[in-house]
Length: 264
Image (cartoon, rainbow, N blue to C red; front, side, top):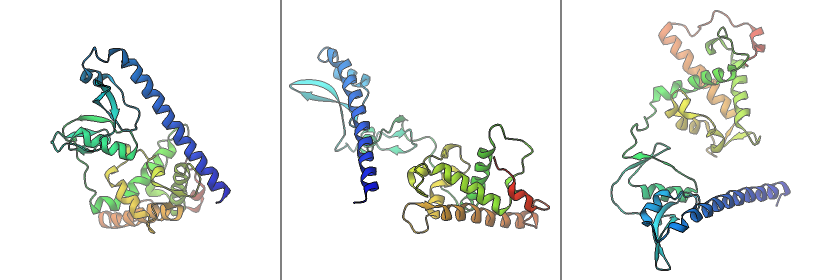
């Protein structure tokens, strides 16, 4: 086995062990705080007070141990068929809370409960028209993010006046910021770092990035990223301007010296 790969695996195992150990320690502390009240207070009431850290994704249930009913954090193996919908903090509706924790345990992650009942705002389906304009809106958003701070000026040129080279540079800058481990590709974990909720047309984010992965290896290279963002945004913009304005040119001229214009 390659030495660097072996070291990476050791570090990964160590990080998971550290996270697991921390969660187990917090769980023991939570259990200890309630232990003096077991047998004196209804276990259902104690369950309401018990925070579950380990196993990851678990929830509190009343179980019998040594003939005594007590609260314990467990992962459900099966769930009742009763319909008591709940909404998670991730915006997904589950038929009941048990199913929420069953999935959380399977994925080994904490999924918080937002409220009882169906999620109030179901996710919109991304239309073909919205998917077409998404890369242009996303580049617009990236441009705004890059200009935030001391160098921001309201007089800065809009994206419609940027050259192809400047758009490529903007896309590359955002790629490098998202590629935290510097392996030259964006994984699903890297793309999760985008703040979808603040992104324009955020419900189109997942289908768009899936379409960028041309070889379907669940990773997006810089070439795929730039082609998706820049080429498709320009295609949409030129078509939009031709239909709406009769010309795809919004700015009179874009001189070559603008190629060196600082984006941020």
